[in-house]
Length: 128
Image (cartoon, rainbow, N blue to C red):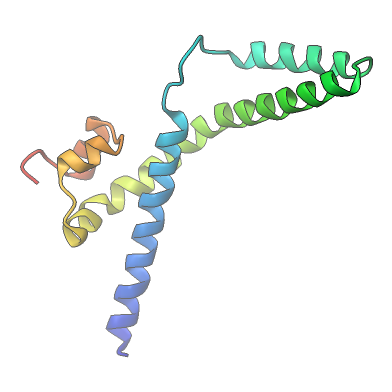
């Protein structure tokens, strides 16, 4: 295998990784049904759950532990919004080349959840 081929494979892996991470982050940020919580609301509910755990019967304790786990995961998703900007920048750098190489057009990107302004920044147009 030539050095050029090895470099091309490495580049493809790096581009694929950037695209995958961004798409996963976009999926995690998708709006969920129901009323949106705020970080403060999540913290208040966590405090309430942790207080209730001290006196809960075994079955209630099980449900409270699951709620605590769910709230912690939701709290992490709020923190992931900051990381989304970094992932978006990495995606913008590689998306056009990746899409051309894999035959992925504008509509497929949009259906995957990539915002139009991000595609525009990446140089992907509707005619692609």
